[in-house]
Length: 273
Image (cartoon, rainbow, N blue to C red; front, side, top):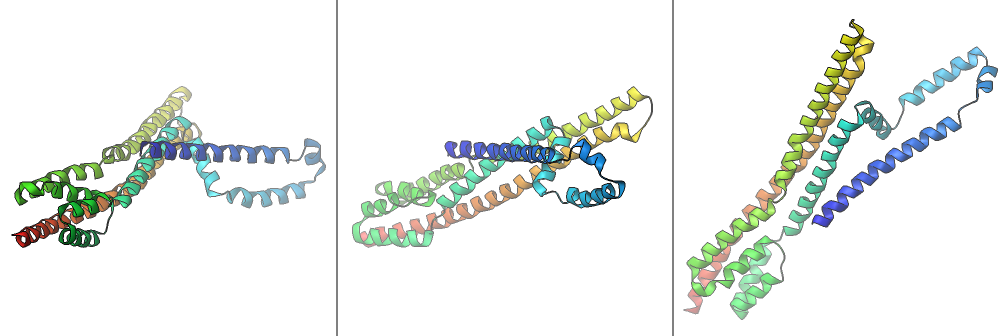
């Protein structure tokens, strides 16, 4: 799983760097195809006006990813870089948890039927073999309970409860880091806000006059970093809530299946007597 996190993080960084390189290449291509000074001077005023009118819609119709890059650059590469880094790391952890939880999901009803059939046909060892060949926390809990069958049903029940807590802790592994990135992203955005406002007030102090053009840059940085941090936090919050819901569903399945296993073992013990 650590390798998966590293690969996802690297993929995100390479995607962002590659898209930035493509954007830079597009700008260079545009500059190379631009008309020379002599060509511009050779055109007349009406042609210039028509060209300006044609260029205005093209500038307004930039692709979304290019508009996002422009806003990131305007918001300040340092602060926006940290905000994007929290997004990449948070998504990597979230995807790792989602993959792990999906792999941990099993059909408990089908597993219980297999365990019951194996108990009736081959005894405890056959049931343990079924659990060994089934992935997921429910099968692991079953195996721990069956492994202590000789000690009595009470010991089996305690073992199932104790190992269920261990499995629950493994399901929740990494959630604290996702919660940290959810809290950290808005804080980084607000830090950019504060520093942007400080820059705006410094410009006012240096000029000795309140001129909108002086403070616009600092306020723009402040607003963009705040919006970026809030968007990152909202994206990660959606994944976090999905993971929490998935864990709750798995825990409920584990508890129901554990109770059913105890009932099956009680019936199996009664049949042996």
